[in-house]
Image (cartoon, rainbow, N blue to C red):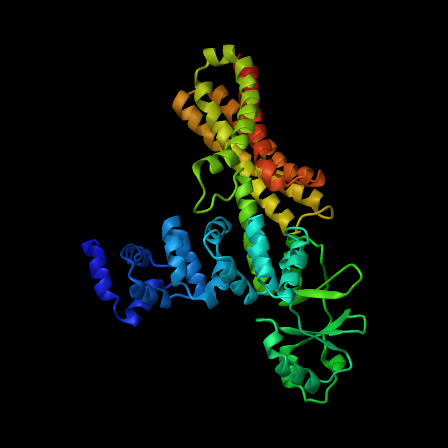
Length: 471
């Protein structure tokens, strides 16, 4: 053990010191804490590990797993609290969870899944190899097993996968007192987290929801039908991104999930939606750059496979843009300043296009841009492009004149920047709209289109205008 680690170990014998060291003020895992855990694992010091882990919540343990090697994670598993294992697994990144699941005994995993909500349990089971999945499910009670199998029967990223099947429902003729008595009697069967009691008709179709806060405020003899609120039903096959949009628009805390016939089959709560919003946001940001989430445990070749295809596509589009340069070789040979200015004009247009593209993709994903206001937004972006193009063209033109003392060259550069900014704005706003109309993800493909347009037209504008003015 290093001297630095020895010093840290001495400083963290007190439980309060451990809690202070484990997390920073922003609740992020402290980098100094990870070596302490790794060192205790290397020495096989079970008592020290127990003390270190006692300072962490299950979510923090999941974060810790991401900073440890695969070997250290395997050695840490036996020291984890079995009751917290399920919660830890539900918080792990997919790649790390798949690695850990290989080392968790089937019987242990089955018990952990019994303590989890059906949606989280289904996510974990979905990551298991076929043989181990069968072993784990066989070791579970019939009710929990059926709930997981039903959840896995829905499409990925649908409301059915997102929902938890555990709900609290009551007939509309019940009173507040009857409902509260029922909750107390069946406390062991209630969801771990719920905000509403769904009021259902005889066909088990939700007709309203009685928030728990309403139950506590009203007298026992008040009928549920009198205090229930309108509900926003979520179809079981709805895409999770649509679900997140509905939660955000209507400021929902929970919502009932119904099958095609309208029967209540589950609920979605806001804690699930926070994860979806983060996931969808991350996907859009990464897609704009043509990459996927590498994850902390991703290998070199896996990352290469996700990024290389878009680089190849970009190579093809840049080759097309280069044909413009080839067509004007004679002009470039006469005015070598053009070779210096071409990448500047192209880069400025590319940045302007990225700005318009980012705004457009974000507006489409948040439903702020549709057919009703598309024309107005397009005109706005074109106006912004022309104004910024005029400003940047004037600046670059002035710089060109000061450096080369050639007014015609300065005018050519200024006009080329103005034209390229117009094309950048047009491509940046239109590419995402058109791609979405075609059923493609605008975040994935738009950046390649816009890059090609600004490079191609940037070269063409500068060389074409220069050929007309200078020759």
